[in-house]
Length: 186
Length: 82
Image (cartoon, rainbow over all chains, first blue to last red; front, side, top):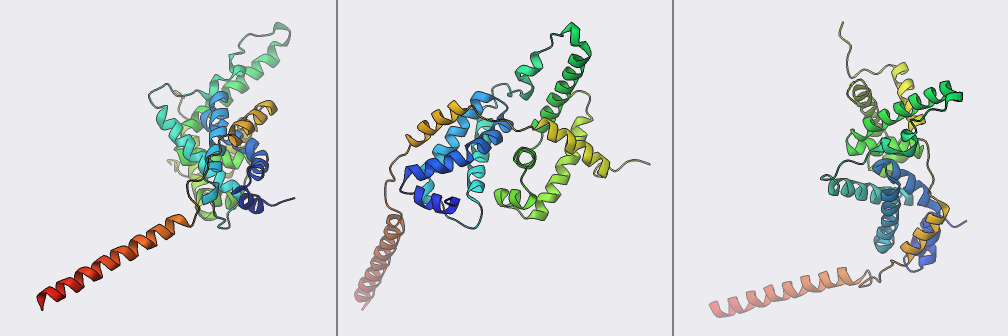
C-alpha cells in the first residue's frame, strides 16, 4: 500500500492520488468536524471544504515529519474556527438538538428503559454543551483524544506542541470541564 | 478545608473520561455522501497559476535588479561629485 507521503507527493500532479488520500481520511475529518460544529449539514459542507482546500494547496504541502493527517486536521481546525466566527451572529448550533433528544415520547411498556435512555441523553447533551463552552483549542484536543483516539504525541504533532504541553493542556481541560459541569444552569 | 479547584483526583479523571468516551462516540458519514463529496472535491481542482520555482526566481530577479539600480546610482553620484 502506498504511504501517505508518497501519495501526497504524487497528488501534486495526479488528482487520483489525492482521491486515495481523501478516501483514507474523509471519515476521520468528518467525525472531527461533526463534533466541532454539532450539525450534520454543516459537517458535510465543511468536510468537503477541508479537502478542497487541501487539494488546492497540495502543491505547497511539505513533508516535515508530521503525518499527512496532521496537515488535514490543521486545515479542518482553521475552517471550523472561521465557521464559528462567521456564525457568531446566528444562534449557536446546539449539539443537543440531535433527533434522539427530541424523543421525549415515552413508550408505556418500556417506561423504565425509556426514562433511563432519556436521562442518559440529557446527560450527554449537557456534557456536549459544556464541551462547546471550552476554548477552541481545548475542544480540538478532546475531539482528537476521544473521537479519533489519538495519543498525546500524535495530538502534539497536529497542534504543534510537545507531548508534555498536551498532557498539561488535557489536565487543565478536564479541570475546566468539571467546573462547567458543576454549574446548575448548564 | 477548601478544596483546590485545580486539583483533579484519579477518580474525578476516570469519571470525566468515562463520560467523554460515552458522549463523543464515533460517527460515520453516509457512504453516498462520501462519494458525492469525492466528486465535488476532485472537480474543484484549480490549476496552479505558476510552477513552484517561479516565485523564488521572480524574487531573486527583483533583488538583482534593485542591487543593479543601487550600484548604478552610486556610480553616477560619485561621477558627478568628481
